[in-house]
Length: 320
Image (cartoon, rainbow, N blue to C red; front, side, top):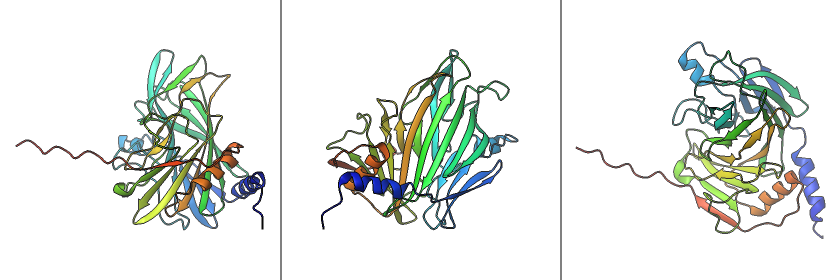
């Protein structure tokens, strides 16, 4: 039997991966549950409670939790633990300049990201989000429309998460900036990750991840409670150019760092997709096929670079 033409195979994968695969359940001012085959496989955290400093710390930004296919094991991190601001699938920037003032909406310094509305769609939902200024009484420095689409991809993946977002200021322009460690769209695995096992796969031979730009995809293999999982990040070609990637930490936070300028007429737009698989998946052909379907391209399978995560340096012994 002859193999299917590549174009047909890609269109078939695209159709399968975009099949309606999830329902959403909205609990106002709390969360949006994403339900697949009767299991909650993702949960968008929408609460914002400033009644106490501790409550604010827990709820100062929205983010998407991801679970395994059974819905029993949480794969992403929430508040607390190391780097409390690292949470699930998140969007943020450490340096946003508006009217000559700079704001940190990564660590949420003197201002939060606040969900103001959730609108379900046929295959997900859209969250309207205010990015606050220095006080809640000020106009937001940015407003955001963050849209999620969910799908059930072809095996070995069990869940697809597509994110498009648009950030815009009320007037003038906003400079969107930061660095690969503290900005962009990022995926943060659970605090229970086994960091010594975290592994990254990059498209291309001998990739220097701290220097390369505009990767089409990046994969991470991570281990939670003794079980291996693979997260594949797809970077749409419409995204800003000169995008750097943070994909080397042992605790698993990885993602894309774009930068640019937003105006009311020309919002700062981003478009990414994550595919989740149970098990250690390092199939470059599969990754490239998924990217081609997402991006509408027909690129060949590249050579790859596989890198064990950078391990933290040993701490110097305390002086006596």
